Image 1 (cartoon, rainbow, N blue to C red):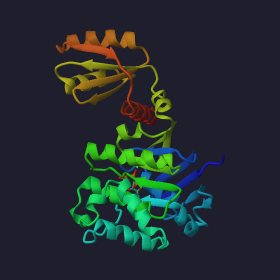
Image 2 (image 1 turned 90 degrees about the vertical axis):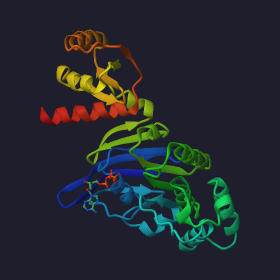
Image 3 (image 1 turned 30 degrees about the vertical axis):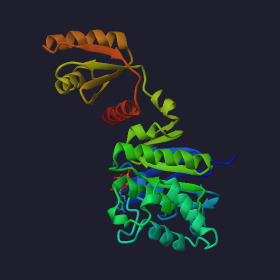
Length: 312
Ligand SMILES: Nc1ncnc2c1ncn2[C@@H]1O[C@H](COP(=O)(O)OP(=O)(O)OP(=O)(O)O)[C@@H](O)[C@H]1O
């Protein structure tokens, strides 16, 4: 089956800034595909090109059978897009916002009421349908945004950092809705800077400075981390991380709360080395143990490795 999203060498420049630098990716129908990267990595620009809003400077992309350059009008019938500045009308109620988007998308009157009812139920907003959007919580606003983006039953849904700034419980709720959509064969293309959220996707593209630095399932991405990952605990984690960064230039060192993560090719040798070194610095090690890497560890290591390549 041909992919529902297919980008080849997609590129966009703004003056001297290369926002997206030759992106190649394919997304299958019914997948939740995550675009993951720090602020400024090029996620929004990619999404705006794939939704036909922004013209690529180079490369090609097809979404739901439409060429994003030539068939941008037709494309809009097949996709839903919830941008970061998704426009809800604060003085309209929940139901009125849905009706407004239904008009914009030309949703036929016939069957519209059932559709709205279903979307309200789906997003747990039925009890709030008469509340003004401006008086909803952050999580509820996001769910209403999602419902509006779904009003014309799109095949592909683009979500740009949809849960940014939303509390963890509402985020979990939001993802429950996304899984439900996928069961109905909607394809979801979502960007996020939250790596715990990225773990929920079927496949991911890691982007950094406009370039793809990893592509695969969350497990495949984790396998990009060579060697082992050690978790080090001391009573002074910040100082420990700073010292280990200097002492172990070949390893990558990250600080995660009160724990220091060290990725290394040789766990046994590094364990011995860091124990001796930290003891000499008067920083007794409480524990060192191998752990399963998270996507965050992979990101820290891959970006650190790029930095080392660049300065080599
Ligand atoms: N309209 C524009 N004019 C000039 N530069 C732009 C424009 N849009 C994006 N850029 C630049 O392109 C790069 C990528 O930005 P983009 O918004 O795509 O990143 P992002 O990964 O979505 O980050 P964020 O989450 O902060 O939006 C940044 O350096 C940004 O400043």
